[in-house]
Structure formats: structure tokens, C-alpha cells
Image (cartoon, rainbow, N blue to C red; front, side, top):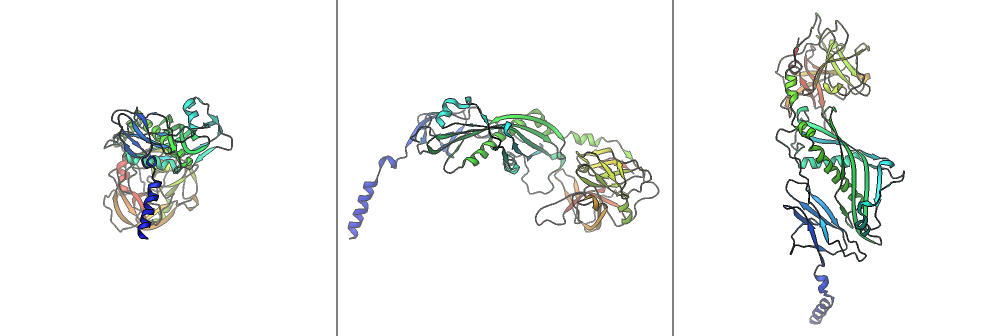
Amino acid sequence: MKKSSSLLLLLLAILSYNPIAAKERTQKVSINTAAGNSIYINGKKALPEKGKYLLPKTQNTHLITAKREGYLDATTCAVPYLANGYTYPNTFNIGLEMIPLPNKLDDAKNLRIEAVPIDLKNESNKIRIFSDYSKYLKKSEKKEAKKRSEFEDIEYDNSIFSQRLNGFLKEVGFIDTTDKVLQNGYLNNLITTVKITEYTYNRAPAHAYFEYGGMVYTELKAEWTLTDIYGDTIFSYETTMVSDKIGYGKNKSISETVKVSITNALTKGLIEFMQTPEVTTSLKDKSLIQKEASFSTIELGLGAKTVSSLSDAIKSSVTIKADDSHGSGFIVSNQGHIITNFHVIALAKNLKVVMNDKTEHAVEIVRISKIHDLALLRIAVQNSVPFIISNSKELEIAADIFAVGSPKAEDLSQSISKGIISGKRRTDQGFFLMQIDASVNSGNSGGAIVTKEGLVLGVVSAKLFGYGIEGIGFGIPAYEILDRLKIKL
């Protein structure tokens, strides 16, 4: 019985054997590419046989990629275009002009993408659909793109593409991947925002009657803006880019394919933007170091009375108000000079200083240091009671300190919180910050960090935010105020 069962299994195996099915069916195709490129089909390196590449005839859309070290991958897709689902075009051109990747110099600044909003209305949002891939091969881009209906505005979450572009910048070395907290200094960082102004979506399914996948590509017009960390515009540029041809099929949805296509077009635009003379110059520009080092000295008068207690400190602290934000500051001369952070006044409109007695005053910006995030302002108030700024470079760890300012909201102006000096930290620019655990919030920036006698030890500049993070704030040491703004008391 056992022997007859074995014979039956062998007979069934012989009858079911199909020599055609056992050997994968392939189509010989020509792939024209530039010298030095390597060709990959569906992610696997492919080598030509007698000048031809073997393309699996599987009724699927295949990914063809050209790779070369130091260049952006070039991609196209092989789409079955006849009703049988097994026939592909015989020739493909890919990577004939590879795009070189940006090369970061050792002393170049980091660059990151802050925003990529896509919210296009009908007039800037077009679509070009082919009934099948064979029609695309005949008409290609000659077919006119049509405006979408008013119900088909395109809108994507900004985070999708900013994350993907920042991932690319990380790969090519323009984003610091070290696990450091204090790495966003002015000298070492630039920011880019992208606004997509026109969008055309193109799609060609394999065949009108069968679900064999298909091809998608996008055309984008985008405005790129380079800014410093404070949001000041350095350079703007417009690109018009066409993505590679991206295939979709059983294991890849059309919606995800569209996102890949948009990312590809944006990446090409980003590379073009980064290779402009204006951006390459900005990435290595450190000229502000010399400019700020050449500041002339400003002498400030203290007068007969100065801050000598926490009560005095509250009275001589101010709120710096703009149209849509506020920060803190403190008086440092009897002629109405005020110290704050530069980021408190950067891009601010209709600046006003609100005193402890609730009076408002117009502001003159006397001097700024973008590198050190400091600003010297002045209001037309005489005989004000100034703080004394410590010129000591010694920071006593665990010493009691008090932070004075306007946390969170303007109606909380001249609040005071207690803490200690938790540490002395070095930034990515090589400067020092004092770490404090006093309670500080948005609005405290620019406020004084003082002793119980009201002596200024520093300026509140930042706080770490995030899940599980409490009591980690930072201040610019007081001696930096005098040194970096070239102030003499």
C-alpha cells in the first residue's frame, strides 16, 4: 500500500510538470543608460546578456533603476501595454543625464526643510489621464492636461514631504545626526521652506480592461525660500520639475505612488535650489563673525539707583509686545536701554515695550547679535532703574537663581520663578549656555536670570519641550551680554 501511494504521487508530479511554467518567461529589452551606471530591476542588480536585459513577463509593472555613486537614483517603470498583460516596450532610456548629489563641505552649515505645504486650488491643480499605457506611448505629454473639478483640490499634510526631504538631507550629510540638544545655532544652520504653486498629476494604467498596475508621474512648480534660523529671508528661487516615471501595482497603491512621485520631483527641485550660487555661498558664509566682532563700544549710564532686590527686579523687567507674539526684557541703563533676545524681536511688527506700570512705549533697536541671540533696545524713558550685569565668567553650579519675565501670556507679565543653575553647556557654535531648572515658558525669552539681590547672571533664551521633559531651560551667561554687544557700564 505504501509503495502504490508513492507511485501515485510520482505520477501526479509528472502530469503536473509544465516546462514552460518551470522556467520564468522573460522579454529581452534594451536599456540605454550613461557609462558608469548600474541597472537594477525590481531592486536587484541586473546584468545584460548579449546587450539585452531580461525583463520578467509576469503581468506586473516593473521598477527599473539606474544607480551611480554620488548621483540621485534615476527611475522608470516597465508597464505591460497589450491586452495579454505580458508585453512590455522593447527599449528604455534611463539615467542618461544623472543628477549629482549635493556635497557638504566640512565647514558648511546644516540645512533642513521646515515646511512643504500643498493646498492647491482648481486653477493650479491639473490632471492628465490616459485610458491605457499604449495611448501614453503614442501621445505622451502632447495630451492636454485638464483642470480638476472644484471638488478635487489637492491637500497633503505638510509633515509627509518635509520628513521625506529632511530624510534625503540627512542621507547627504546636511542634517546633524549626532544626539545633541544644543545644535541649532545661527552660524551653523539654515532653513528652507517650500511652497508648491502648480501641480499636474499624470497616470497611465497598463490596460483599460485589466488591473496590471500602471505608471504615475507628477509635474511641480515650487518656490523655495532660504532663511536663517530667525526666519529672515536670504534667497528665493523657483523650480519646475518633472518626477521620474513611478510604477504602481498589486503591492503598491496609487496614492502611495503619487507621494513617491511628488517626493522625487521635490528632491530634484531641492538639489537644483542647493546648487544655485546664492545657496552654496550662504552655506559657507561666516562673515557675520567679523562684522559683530567689529562693533564699537556703547557706554551705558546706570545712575544713582540700581536694582538691589527681587522686588526691584520685577519693577525693572518689561514685556516686549508685537502684533502676534510677546517676550521679556530688562532695563540696563537709566536712559531706557533694554536687553532681550534677538529672536523676540526678529520679524516682529509694531513692537512696543510694556512697563511694570502698564504704560506702553515705542522701541528703538540699537544693536543686535544674531550669532548670540541678543538685542539692545531703547525706549524714551529717563531715570529708569537698571539692573547690574555680572561680568564674572564663573557659574556656581547649584546656586539659587530667579527667572523674571512674562511667561505664556501678557497678563502674566513680570512673573518670577525660582530654581538653580543646573549646569554649563557648550553649543554647536562653541559658546556656553547656563542650564537652569526654574520654570520658564514661551514669553520668558529675553527675561533676566538673577540672584536674590537682583544681580543679572544671564538671559533666558530657550527651554526644552517634549514628553517627559521638565525643568530644562537655558540662559545666555551675563558676561556674554557685555562682550557680544560691546556694552560698557
